[in-house]
Length: 179
Image (cartoon, rainbow, N blue to C red; front, side, top):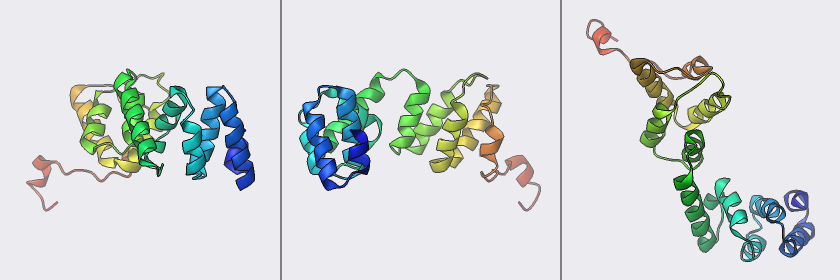
């Protein structure tokens, strides 16, 4: 049914919304709600959400739809759900992804990044660093400086993310030259 919501014409989208309302499955409702949000079918989305449980709301909140929904009451509830999920999360990488996705303050992103412990088996670090680099390139460079000063293990493929960051002049060197 989600394919109907994502790819259908208006009649097909309305059909998907109607069928989702009749379906008791939160996974079906969530997938259709996501399709309705993607297609900006706000009236149908509001109607579906009014009869949906917290799992559907949390799915949309997790995916950042609170910034895209036009209806202010729906937007506020999704924002509250996202904030509650962030507060409950014990996964530092998931928390950092949430900060990035929701345009968190650069200082908070950098602090969260510096606090991470990277292991060689952490396969999410390259993707995480890529996402950070898109919005917060200075946070990577500053965190890398902190990791080096404190002797922390550097994440995998950190060099790929530092190539685009301009170097910060070393005060000891710049005092002796015109840098």
